[in-house]
Image 1 (cartoon, one colour):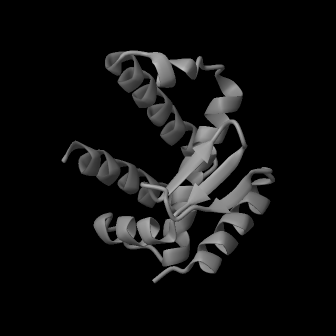
Image 2 (tube, rainbow, N blue to C red; image 1 turned 120 degrees about the horizontal axis):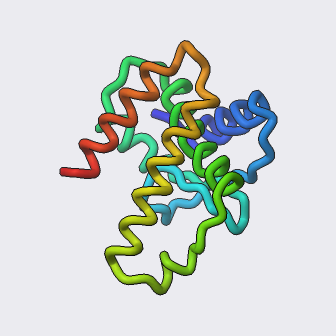
Length: 139
C-alpha cells in the first residue's frame, strides 16, 4: 500500500527530475487519484484513491513507477495549460455537451503531452494505463 508520504516523495522526485515547479497537496476529499489545478499550479492527490486506482488498473510496474505514470499524466495537464489558453468558464457555465467536449479535449491532450516526458522504459506501461483508464471511464 502506498502512503501519503510515499506518494508525495515520488511526486517531488519526479517533478525535480523534470525540472518543473508544481505545488503538491494531499486532499482526502478528492474523488480521483490525482488532479492538476491550473489556477493554483497544484497537483492534488488522494492516497486512498491512488491505491484503489492501482488495484483497478493492472500493469506490471512497481508502486513507484505506477505513481510516476500518474504524475506524468498530471504534467500533461500542466503542459496543456501552458500550451493552450482555454476558456475555463465553459466548465462552470457551459451546457453539458460543451463541458464534456472540453473535458475530453483537455484529457486527450494531457495524455499526449504527458507522454512526451515519460522515460522510454515506462512508455509501454504509460500507454497501457491510458488504455485501461479509457475502459474504466466507459464502464
